[in-house]
Each structure stands twice: as structure tokens, then as C-alpha cells.
Amino acid sequence: MEAKAIAKGLRISPIRARLVADMIRGKNASEALSILENVNNKASRLTKKVLNSAIANAVNNNGENASNLYIKEARVDAGPVMKRHFFDSRSHIGHRNHRTSHINIVVATKN
Image (cartoon, rainbow, N blue to C red; front, side, top):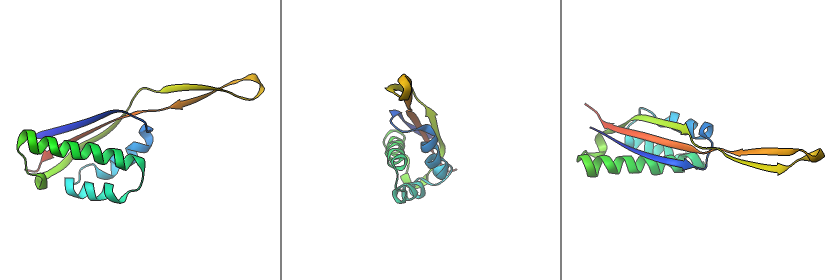
């Protein structure tokens, strides 16, 4: 069985979050948690929350054993962009885009 967890609208760039998602894709859930514990950045903290939620969904909703779970899918999609403007030199308007992310994690049992 599969269980998933999604976090939407996270205030981190999808490019930065994908670096962490690539590290844990296909790994055991316990191994992925230990990887996320030892990576010290914002993306790993947010991904760890989503992974813990996906594991809890599998255990509580499907009755799975947490030691048999692996990460079937770890995907980071781009969310809405918050566009901010500021005054630049020579009466120009500068742009600063605050990008957001949607983190999707699917865990499944090994057969």
C-alpha cells in the first residue's frame, strides 16, 4: 500500500528543495530520516516534516510497519511566485521573486 503527504506553499525555492529530495528518493524511510537529520539546511527540515507525516499516514491509516517503508516518490513542484517590486537606480523598478514550493512524498511497502 501507498501513503502520501503533501506540503504546499512552502517559502523555499523549488531548486533548493529538489537537491534534498534527490538525496532521499528510493531510500528506506529510516535511512532517509537519518540523511535529513544530518543535512543542515531549511529544505531538509521541511522535507523531514513531510516525510514524518507520510510515515504516520502509512502507519495509522494503512496499518503498515514503519521499518518496511521506502520512499517511492519524492517530488518538489513550483508553487505560486510572490512578486515583489522595489525602487532601483535611475528611477527604475527592480523585481524580486519569492518562489514557493509544493513537496510531495509517497511511501510504500517493500514486497
